[in-house]
Amino acid sequence: MIRTLAVTHKGEVLLNLALGEIQLADYAWIWVDFASPTAEETLMLDSYFHFHPLAIEDCMHILQRPKLDYYESVQFFVLHALNERTLEAEEIDLFLSKNFLVSYHHQEKSEMNEAWDQVRREIHSRKGWSGGPMAAAYTVMDKLVDKYFPSLYSIEDELADLESRGSSESVEELMSQVFDVRGRLLKLRRTIVPMRDLMYRIVNSQHVQSNGEERIYFGDIYDHLLKLTDMIEVDREMTADLRDSYISLNSNRMNSIMKTLTVITTVFMPLTLIAGIYGMNFRVMPELEWKYGYLAILLLMLVLGGGMFQWFRRSGWFK
Image (cartoon, rainbow, N blue to C red; front, side, top):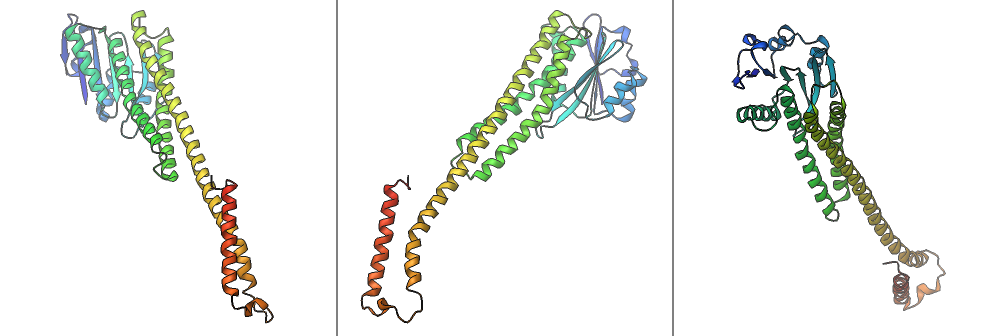
């Protein structure tokens, strides 16, 4: 699907004009959005706009790393949106010139719809920063970055919940959840860090068609990405701390179990020795003929076991 937003020299907005009927000279600027385009629609990147073949090839190959390339009067951006369900990156490409913005993406994205509606509203109201293709490009990037926050906030809430459940669930289940969170943080990091590097290049590049005021807005996006990166690093450190805590907790539980088994084994060792001695089948064992031998041996074993138990308790084995 191709949708168009054309702004006349008088500031009027015309929507969904046929692309083949648009003459760039007749308008102040236009925004053309290729959303899940067909093969025939994709050909218009070459037949109508005459973009560089390498840029068109990058649009076809999924998934490129976020980047900025310069082709004569056109800047080509590769951006990453975030799939909120899988946390996988989804590519969005922008072609930016003085009088047009072309966006290309293989999936329908709510961020693009929000940016489209916001640009249209700002032009109608003539409020805020609505200066043309650069403003529209900024709006797209801002919406993409804003969508990163909910996923990261959700992970932070999950980490806080994991920290509070440390004593109520098995260590195996908790460790599995911690490693799952670390995997999702890694996915977010693979998306956010390249976007941060790209935004740094945009803010500091002399080739991008923006003035000082516009750079302030791009700098704000860069600050958001810095914040996201710091949050990811803090969360990764937190998962490492949780992992170490669970390992220590598991070791303490194992030590407690081993200590209990050791005490039981130690108490029964002399009792087993006595039982073993009188379980031998020698003919000459005087105690076997004693009338009270059985009771005496039981009493001895009881006193010996109880005495060892009291000794271990006084020695602090049960603390």
